[in-house]
Length: 248
Image 1 (cartoon, helix red, strand yellow):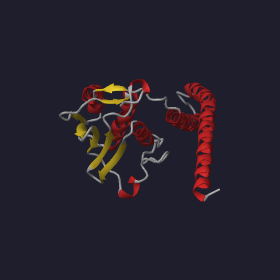
Image 2 (cartoon, helix red, strand yellow; image 1 turned 90 degrees about the horizontal axis):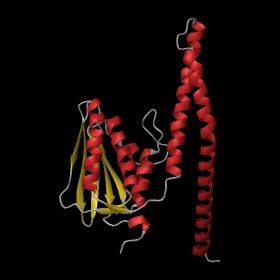
Image 3 (tube, rainbow, N blue to C red; image 1 turned 180 degrees about the vertical axis):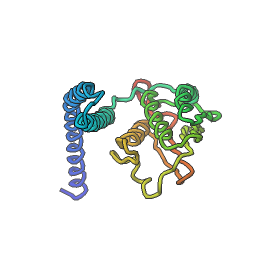
Image 4 (cartoon, helix red, strand yellow; image 1 turned 180 degrees about the horizontal axis):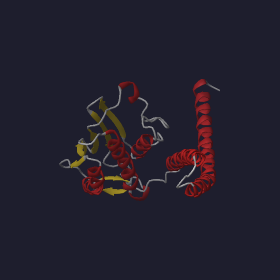
């Protein structure tokens, strides 16, 4: 057996093992989810009994139970995001008017941003043609970027969503005026379970990258500490077809 053929076979075996491991991990997470929910529910019921602690012992117990309940909620969030990441449904491609969809999305999120003291604005590009993609998946990816921008930007800051025609494709940018990402961390932000947020799961940006790549595109990052961060989604005009049929 020649070396290239042997390496190709070994690579295929590794991919098959990784696929099996992913299936096993998803099944494990699903099995853990139900008992974890039961634990969380019972902790809430016990905490109800300590709502008005009377003795120092009761106060200590309440504090410890609240800590455990908070950790259970954190684990539940990690499990849900992992299952969403591991078992993302197959995309269903169809025509998308990005400017119209993003304008509606920004309008929907603007009140929440305003409550946090942030300005959210949309700048539609000219001559941006419809693309072929799965809006449910893209909406989830862009929603992740908006949540990250909100968490990174202090009150008084600004978040901007924009589109721009790029040859036959479209660039979608989400820009904030937040804290920025240090250079030494930028290469890691798309790695699963890496997060700079205390309560972050580290699956948001890997999900964004997976969604963009399933559309045949890519995602890039520009950031400057103290000034802000910009994520750019590079989406080809034709990344698939309606209901997954290829487009000529």
